[in-house]
Structures are given as C-alpha cells and as structure tokens.
Image (cartoon, rainbow, N blue to C red; front, side, top):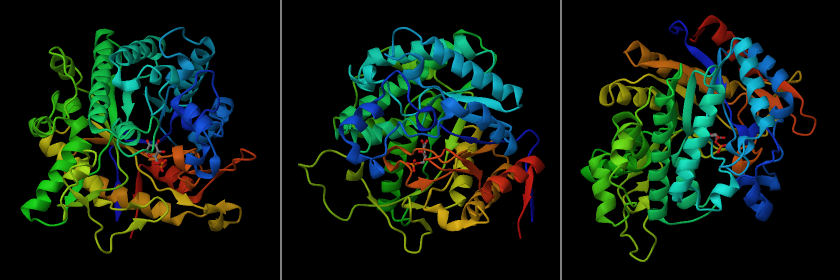
Amino acid sequence: MKYAFPDNFWWGSASSALQTEGAREGETTWDYWFAREPNRFHNGVGPQQTSTFYQHWKTDIQLLKQLNHNSFRTSISWARLIPDGIGEVNPEAVDFYHQVIDELNEQGITPFITLFHFDMPMAMQAIGGWENREVVDAYARYAQICFELFGDRVLHWFTFNEPIVPVEGGYLYDFHYPNVVDFRRAATVAYHTVLAHAKAVQAYRAGHYAGEIGIVLNLTPSYPRSQNPADVKAAHIADLMFNRSFLDPVLRGEYPADLVALLKAYDQLPACKPEDSALIAEGKIDLLGVNYYQPRRVKCRDSAVNPQAPFMPEWFFDNYDMPGRKMNPYRGWEIYAPGIYDILVNLRDNYGNPRCFISENGMGVENEQRFIENGQINDKYRIEFISEHLTWLHKGISEGCNCLGYHMWTFIDNWSWCNAYKNRYGFIQLDVETQQRTIKKSGEWFAATALNNRFEQE
Ligand code: BG6
C-alpha cells in the first residue's frame, strides 16, 4: 500500500527550550526543584544536562535539514527572555532566538513557536504561579513581547504546550513542582491558564500580525471498558476533565456545561470574575496542535470513595487495564494507533473540523544502545510505531479531517523532566557525555518519507 500525503504537508518534529537549550540566567521551577530534591529525577540528572541547543543550534538546524524537515516546533524560554518573568528583557536571549528563527527560515524550515512548555520562571512561581492572576498578566506581557520581537518571521504561534500537564503534575499527582495535591487549586491553575491563553490570543489579534495562533493539547481519547452506562459515564467524565477542560474553551470559546455543573456540585470551581467569559470567548484559535501518545481506558469504580480522601478525578472512574493491550513498557503507555484517527474524527464531527496537525507523537525507549548495528541505532520499533500512526492519520485525512502535518517527539534525544535520559525519543541519538549526535534508522526513514511526501507499507 502507498500512503501519499497532501501537498505542503508539515513534516517535522517538536522539542522545547528547557529540555534542549541548557543553562540560562533566569531560574525556572525545574532548576529550583532539582536543587532541592535531585532524588526526584532519574539518576539524579537535572535540567542543566541538556542537548546543548544553546551552543549547537546552528549545526542542529543542519541536522533538521538532513532529516528533510519543512517545519520544526520549539519553545521560547520565558525565564531566558525575561529572567524574573515581568521585568527587563535579556538582550542576549533576544539575539539567540533571532538567530535560531532566522536560520530556520533561511534553511526552509518553518518555525513553530510555543510560548510555554512547562517552564515557569521561579520568580513567578514564588508569587503563586498560575494560581495568581498577576502571573496571567505577566504571561500576557511576555507573549506580547514575543509577538513584537519575532512576529514578522514566526507565522505559527502556540500559547501553551499540554497545559493540562502542569495541572496534573503540579497540583494533583505530584510529578511537577510545586507538588501540591488539591483539586480546587488544580482547577484554578487550569482556569487561569485558559485566561492566560485567551489574553495572548487577544494580544495577537490586536497586533494584526501576519500569522496564526493556536495551542498544543495532549488529547487522550477516553474509551469505556464496555457500553454499560456506568462505564460510559466514567469515560465521559474522564474526557471532560482531561480533554474538554481545554479543548472546549479554545475551540468553542466556553467550558462544557456538564463539567462546570460537576465541579460546582463538589464545590471545586475556581473563583471566576464576570468579565472572564467574554475573554475566554476571545481565545478561540486558528490552529490546534494535537499531541497523541496514548489512549485512556476507563471503567466505573468498583469501590466506594473514601470521603476523607482528597477529591480527585478518580472519584468518578477507575483506570482500566485492558487485557492484551499493546504497551510501551519503558514509559508504561499503551500504544494504540487508531486513537489518532478517533481524535481527528471527533474534531471533524464535534468541533467543526478545525485546522490541526499532529504536533507530537512518539515512543520513548530505554537503553537503545543494545540496538546499535554498524554504529547506528536500528530502531525498527520506532519506524513501525510511526508508520502505524501515519496509516491511521492518512485514513482520517482521506475522510475529510483537516490535519495539516505530523511532527514527532523528538528531534535529538533530550532531557525528559523527571525521567531525565531514561527513555530516548529522538530521530538522532545523543551521547550525553560527548554531545555527539548520530542519526538513527528512524531518522533516515523519516527523511525519506518527508522528501517523498509518502511512504509504502505491505
Ligand atoms: C510530552 C511533552 O508530554 O511528551 C514533552 O510535550 C515530553 O515535553 C514528551 O518530553 C514525552 O514524555 P516524557 O514524560 O516521557 O518526557
């Protein structure tokens, strides 16, 4: 079978500032947390040990070219650009991002730029992070500065990458700083993130910049164990909490009424101001980035909730370990390629078929050195993973879904938050000690696919 993609399809990959650039003047929550609790990070490796993009950006962009990328997403570090989050702009950071953006454009690689990829300046966290509306305003100022500085040469902006993740990690499940477990505070963080997003969109519209603005969401389709109404309801609530809490505001300009009613019933709603709804309505986007790694399988709870326990999303469902599901054992995530198709069909049928693209998809694998053949990692499993997902993506496009591209996570193996370098995701192998870069087999396969705008599979 041959799978051809539409003209001008975006082929590329994604990365983020904190995970690749290396040390900077402005402290982030990650630097602060790592300095205090290095044991929380795999092998005690922190955010200083990156793939040194700050030094090697020029040669790395050559490698992107070698992989036949026509587009590439990375983020601007708020803390590098404005070390205390709200004050002076650092001219060295401005030069750095100018150079990177110019070089990408010169090499024919369209820059896609994210404004916030989990890396809160510590000075902003110190005043409450996303719980504080002053931080929302500081973010809006930062976004506007970025548009003014780079808006003539960056035509695809993303306000946030996976905004639900800092909510889950920082305020529910204890895998990001500030390690709080408190649903109402989590809901406040999520709500203020939506306000921050909307303020950035508002500023972008007001500036009449040449490009488009969107957001990147990690969408996890929720599949019920069975069609029993209790299982279906459990899946619906998981969908409301983890997907629609961001998807609806950014595409429809409002929250789902049943999500609001549910949180109200449990007294978990954040404090809202009368002017917020008009602002949220202004946050509708031009382009949606979809990160897809895994589905969410759920069933109704078998046991009663402990009324003393903290209120959690899991009050309404249990995770369902479907027998025989295909797993990526290194990350503990299910591999389910049809999920990508289901997401696109949902967007087509229920959200007016927005302009979208797959902004991340990928597979982190441990100890890839064992697959080295003639000096190169032969990551067949990754090629299989990508082609399977592309097959389903192709089906979605052929049925009218408005999907404009496919970006992989990631370009060069990079530092993965608490997992540090445990699992490798890159098209290019990184030797962390020597910083040597070596293209994996999947990199070659992707380069050929991008060049031909098609691939073949039996
Ligand atoms: C996405 C993020 O959640 O998945 C990336 O946008 C992240 O920043 C990637 O690195 C892979 O997840 P992890 O947790 O294995 O690094």
